Amino acid sequence: MPRKNKTTETNTDVTVFIHAFVTHEQKKQDSFKLIELMQQWSGYEPKMWGPSIIGFGSYHYKYASGHEGNAPLIGFSPRKSEFSLYVIAEQCNYNQLLQGLGKFKMGKSCIYFKKLDDLNLNILEQICKITIQCLLEKHKVADK
Image (cartoon, rainbow, N blue to C red; front, top):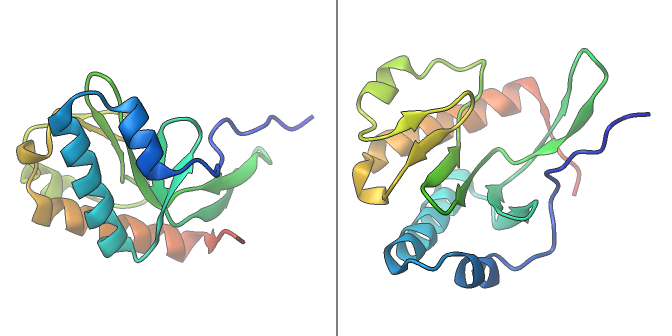
């Protein structure tokens, strides 16, 4: 039996989520700024994915194991301790860009940072656009 994806698109209102989930005022402001920027960079409206990820656009993936599903092209989550940016695709090379991104920690497939002022937004824009391009070259846009 195929496993069910935990992170799927929901009908939760993004603005309602930010006001309910984010308690720190600066993080709230950074969240709304990220929504504005990612919407502009991607050309997609923000949508909630799972309980706490704000995603933009979507693509369909299928692994060799047969597991498949949809995921946002780019996104973020304003977690309690820090932001998680979902803007990295394994098939893309970001080494040069990451050197100029600013103050962050790297996870397996995401970037963690405390506040938007810690990042170079021009570099972040380039990373987001490269990711979208890489993902759309390899995968098809998910059906709506």
